[in-house]
Length: 164
Image (cartoon, rainbow, N blue to C red; front, side, top):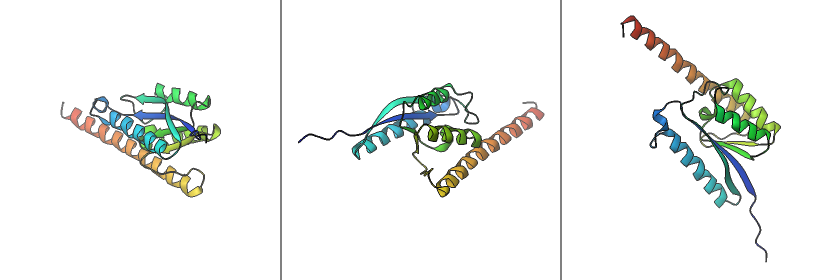
């Protein structure tokens, strides 16, 4: 009896951190990679063979916009070239903190029949409820980014008025 071959799922892993400190071996960047690779193993153990086709890593890059992230742009080119079946991230805020950028990404993924899997948040982009939940979460991520920027500006202004 011939052994049935597992379906191969080509995965693009995307990781990003905002600060240099998070790039260190004990920082968030390594944690993201480890968690995504663990997911590949779990999914492979479940039946399909999930392979790391590419790893895209942005070190000390803001999530505010995608235009200034070369690894993100390389990932998009791979999506358009149909090199991946699924894009994996640990959480939504790692891919972007912009509603507009996220909507554009989802459109590109759908257009090229590539799935999106987020480790910490479950999404179903095929239903109105799933799209609503996804949009709410990305709105919160954008709000957090804007709030952090506002607090930073206020702190810098206060320090400047004190002559620091």
